[in-house]
Length: 252
Image (cartoon, rainbow, N blue to C red; front, side):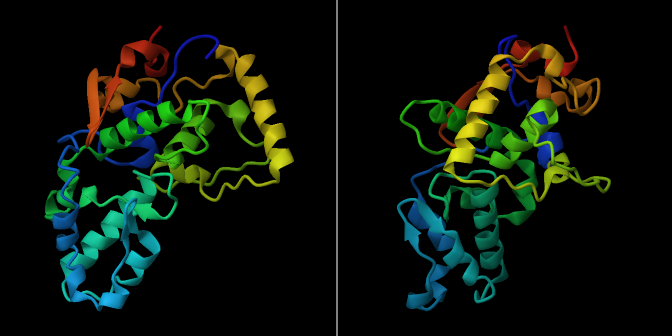
C-alpha cells in the first residue's frame, strides 16, 4: 500500500473462515494419485458412471453425482470432503476440478481436525496471489472467499455502496456476513470498476483502513497468528512474518 505493507494473517483466516490455524502442517505426497483414487473405491461403481479423473484433478460435478451410490459410507465421506476442499479452500483455475491430494489426510475422518487447514489455505492463497501478479496471468485460484471478505473488512471504501451485511449467529465465521454478494456487469463496466479501484488504492491513506476489524488484540484472540516462519500446503512453502504488518495486530 502507499503507506506500508498489509497482508492476510492467520488471525484473519481463523475469524473469517472459522477453520483451525493450529495443528500439524498439511504436508504429504503429491505423487500417489493412483493410491488415493483407490481410497475412493471408484472400482465399485459401474465403469460408465465413474467420476472422471483428469490431469487437473477430480471433476467435481461428476463426483458429487456418485455420492449415495457407494457401498461404503467412508467412500462417500471422502468423496464429499475432497470436492468440498477442492472447491472452497484449495481452488485451482480449472473451475470444475478438485485435486485428490487431500485424500491422504481424510483416510481417518476422526483425525481431520488435527491438521492446520488454515495455514495451508493461507500458504496456497499467498502462492496464487504471487502468480496472479504476473503480467501474463489471466486468472487466479485459491480461497477467494477469504480474499474478498478480507478486503471488505479492512477497506470499507472498497465495498459496493449498495452492499448490505447480514447478521451473524453466534459461532458463525465472519465471511458469512457477506454471503450473497454478487458483482456483475459487462466488460466495459468491469473496466470502469477496475480503473476506479486502482485510483482509490493509489491515493489511499492509512485513515481509510479499518486496522483491527475483529477486536483490539488479534494476537491475544488467536495466538498462532503471531507465529513467524514458514507455512506450507503440500509442496507450497511461503514465509509468514507478522512483524511486517504490526498495525494489523494493534501495534505501532
